[in-house]
Image (cartoon, rainbow, N blue to C red; front, side, top):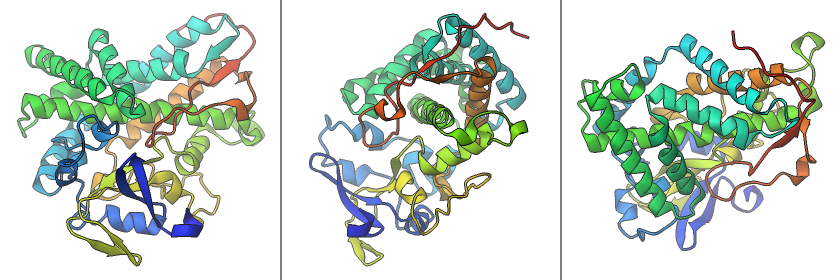
Length: 373
């Protein structure tokens, strides 16, 4: 793509759904920091998109910071930032540890595990439910609906299931507040309506389940297949944080996202971008742009895995903590963990947006259950 098109690539996100994919780092940063010319509001674009289009739930307008610009964006972002800032990071560390130990104990005597289905997904799901104050019965419907949206398979019904579940969560929290993100959103000065609350929660779950699970899994894959991460800090090998930094650059959990819609035909790098047609940032393409990728990833935060500009992810510190703790708990408990199949036999789930393995099978010497502190 880079050799043929340069920084801007004409693509179809789905049959007949045309877009421009940005694979040049500096071009992406310019676009992400220019909401005046590249707003994130897709309403004019989606007028002509069929309701059953499999990618529509990922890109459609929602009354959230992710899909608005200007004063609307400021209003929604302030509510979300305030709600997330109330997360007790020390308490979150303890929550991850407790959930991780319980999950590890469920398979440690087997000698084999699918690290996605039996560990990364249920851990991410349980942690997010705890942060948002969501009971398991609602959370399961949320997870099912969200998976359908990301994969673009039966996405319309998945979107309906997701929104119905989150409407129920909103109603419960209005009746019974708690010390959680959902309650803090409801109590924020912006006075979000029930419909606005549902859409905030859609984005929080969307950003929380798939990308966080993928970050954890893709980092585990790197650590289990790259000798640089074998051993411990004492013998000079790289740390979990180093692995996370590298994955955020080279194999980010969202490969392509951060869509914007030019207000009018706009020329960028000698290419005319049509008005109201999606301009999608390829985080993978931009991070691996030879113009900026020098192979130095440790403590390097210049990647676009969390976006950039006014739509930068407000939950980066939460994501880092959960992924790092989940990996450390697993590898501390099962230090001889190894892939059960050759790395080249691992397969990836379908979908134009996420970077997600279908499974990550591993083996290890059978171990007795851990004792929680």
